[in-house]
Amino acid sequence: PCQFCRKLPQCPAGRELSRTGTLNFRFECKPCENGTYSSSSNSWCHNWTDCESRGSVTLRQGNSTHDSVC
Image (cartoon, rainbow, N blue to C red):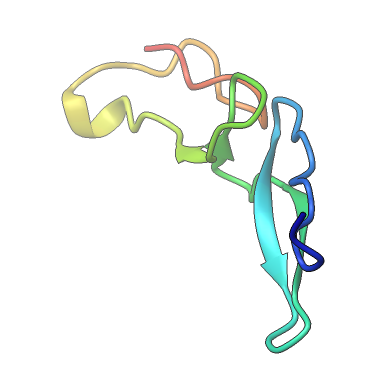
């Protein structure tokens, strides 16, 4: 077995995997930044949809687990 292998953490919706450190780095789950969301576990954070740039109105602003609704 690999002595340096580590199991990656399982990140819930609203968080994404992030590497901390340089030489002796590790992985941890960090919250999605403001303006981004992750709607399922183990997924990356994506920018909220910009409804206005599409010529639409924002009906509901996004949050860390849901995209904006136009």
